Image (cartoon, rainbow, N blue to C red):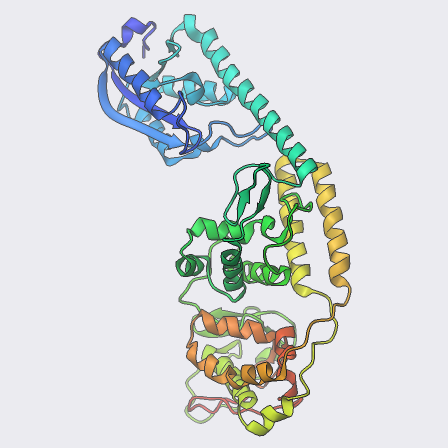
Length: 495
């Protein structure tokens, strides 16, 4: 296979275009329009055949000074499609407007030069008139690629230095002002009073269990704006390195921690939301014998590795029983109906409700569990960041801050009490609310607001541990220490 050795050898060959900008907002002299103009002139000058093939991305060609990963531009479907088309022989010349628009990584530039040549495709750098297969142009090609990388390294260093100075001097993260913030006359980031209520609404909905998409639909914000709000510490008055920002929290920290806990629980290990057709409300259901969590599985709450005590605690089966007999699990409706019966007991009777009045107090002083859960998540994130950048000083600073926050969170905190009339209304509506939720995610949200843990011994008995919210609303004052319930749908199951 012989590649064109001189620019004159390009005449009559089939051309394709590569257009790259660092972001969708780039409109400078090296932007898409300028690149296309340079490519048009090269097609006319050499009499190239314009195949109409063109790939355009708005991604950076630089992955960072120490990163071993490919830059965002070369991981896009467009770039991969361009490689595939070259491999299939669909074009002979790839037109690149400017050297810096190809790749800002010398090693990868040489790697992909070799790939294209192996496919019979050459690169023509329009602005610098460089032919990748011309021996006389090789040194210039290397110099241009090296220059693009040096510029990126210098620019990254200057940006990091500027941001570091801004953080140190002004407690300002630098960069674009995200939703809920604005820059004042001194170019310092500050909360935007008009948007702060919307931020509070987003976090409140997330804490109540709403999904990111549902929040976006409710508030009219974009999905990624919602996700940005729910993942950025700026909204609780901290910079991304954990240091204090120059503004107070935009939302209540406890509500923020609750929202983080709800989102973390809803996410799977793959980072995807749980399947919507598996709405198992009792995520806090555990085996009373061994402590393993009971998982929702095809309409059952099932003990994955059933222990002998759980399997032995089966109900007395009536004549003609056709259900499971192995004691590994029970239908979802049984456990959830048991909860419904419990809530009915709490909701009924004016006398019971009246007895609550005057007894509702704040829950006993205890560690801030939501804050501790948030700290644990941040520790995991910090370790993952360290594995990427190996910045031990940043890791030490983050861990020292989290150690201080953990010590404070573990100190018993007194919570505010709930007015009696509010508690009575809360308790009265529980059973109705449970039924209205059907089998959807709302039922799970309610269960998680009431029960910190439920330990079940098969289907014979269960012990519930209430959340601070349920205790504060008088839930514990209206149920006896032991309650016998009858649960079933014509099969005689009891708990």
